[in-house]
Image (cartoon, rainbow, N blue to C red):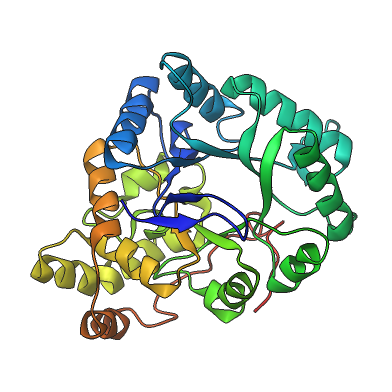
Length: 332
């Protein structure tokens, strides 16, 4: 497994990590045994970076990881990233964002307890609170480093301008953003900012929530996911359009002797040395397809062929619904 740097002063981590969102019921029901099998496969593949959040399954993802670590001998084999900052209004039940120092540290303490560790490698602000300047939030996160609770920090779904403002206060190890052949907004400023600052671009949903695989989601799988069934790219109108539009990538992968997921991961890794994809899955077979992409080196002809089949803007439907769009910073 190749390595990439996690931030300007960070350690080397595996060039592909594992996303822990699938350890909760985000994309459908799963079991702890299935999640632990993924973690076993990750260790076998040399993956040492795992990403989770306090809101994935209302803490379930962290608990699953914590119980896995508890049964191991010796130190954790993973550099763990988790997140805080998304919460629920106690009166209305609506989702809101809280980047206050008290909230971020309290949620971090709960995450550490669920994970069974005394610190994490990386702590993200999951969504920015627009009422608190990012400079102030960055100071809060730097204080958590000083307390020894985190080694470094990052932000999820922020604009390049926000990243640059934060980096004036303290080096930012990572920015997490959706990035794949179907979602290419980071090409328009975020990658460039990350390269300038030495910040890792941790790419979630690198295979397009399943569209960039050999077995794209069926209507039944979409219906089983509370997120997908309300996402514009997976509606009854757009799902068949997107499956048809992405078919040339599956054809090309088959001709090259690779899985479609591996080809999509390899394409993403080719974009910049700052990119670290964190695919998630409930299947060990699919996991091995994803990991295979880390070992593929695509020549210029293959990259050009991929772009010819899936040029920017090929996907039908917005990345998020109106409700899902609340929180991520729009910069292009």
